[in-house]
Every structure is written in structure tokens, then in C-alpha cells.
Image (cartoon, rainbow, N blue to C red; front, top):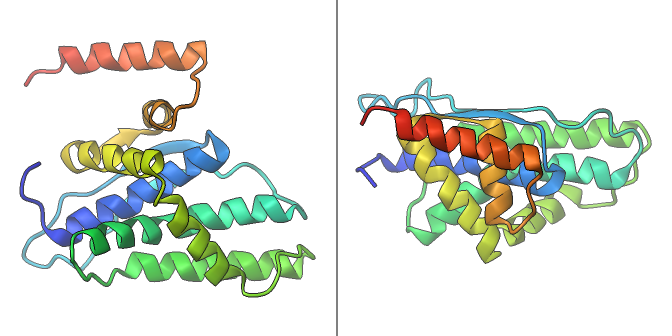
Length: 192
């Protein structure tokens, strides 16, 4: 892997964490994952990666559905934190703070709507998503998402969904197999 700034790698793991959790919990809905070029003169200012997802419709009063949404929101910080601990790096990222605030707002909205998730929900869910990233297949999916994200800077959601499903040991539909074959053909035709 080329020499990337630790903050850039952290952000890539953050976005990969969201993407893998989205596929793990919902199996669909990922549109694209992007990572902008990194400005070495001011690494922390204006650096915005994006994970474009469509969370499945209204979760109504389903506590399990709300929890899955919250886990996807919290997954970015959990994956990036795992990478940072594994590599002895300490990084403070506003994206993590924003995601936690978003999760707290979603939790509050769900509780106001009468969804009973229980006490101490955010810390419990943060522990749950951190535990998910300790599973070897799940962590391998995060790592295998991060590497091409750093290189390519954008990955189509449909292609990434197929790759993550394979890494997690899940079966692909015929349409997904065809999509991967077409993507492999496009990659082979790309000039190097």
C-alpha cells in the first residue's frame, strides 16, 4: 500500500466500517463510498469523506430495525477506532463525533415515537458494533474495502456490496454474479 497519512487511512476505515455494517445488517442500500484526495498542508480542515447509503424505509416501531440503523451509523467510528488501536495511532475525527450525535438524535426520535430500545442504548450499541469488527470475516471485509477505497477514491455501492457479501460468506444472486463479472471486465480493460 502506498504511504498514506494516518488521518486519511483512519477516514477510509471509518467509511469502510459504515459500508460493511450496511451490507452486514441490511444486505443492500449502499449507493457509493467516496474518499476525497487528501490535502497534506491542512489534513483536518474540510476533509469530508462520504458514504452514500439508503437505509431501508421507515422502521416504524420496530426496536430491532432502529438498532440496525443505529449500528450502521456508529460503525464508522468503531472500525476506525479498531484500526487506530491495532496500529498504535490516536486520532480525533469530527466525523466520529457527528455520527454519535446523529445516532443520539435518531435514538431520541425513536423513543419519542414510542420505540422501546432500553436504557443505556448508545454505549451498549457501541460495544456491540465494536464486537462485530472483532469477527475475522467482518474485519477482513473492512480491510478489503479500505484498500481499494484509498486507491480508487470511489467505489460503486452495488459492486462493493457483492464483494463484501462474498467476504462475509454470503451467497450472491445471479444478477450479482453477472454484475461482478461485468465489473471485472471493465477493470481488465482499464489502462494501467
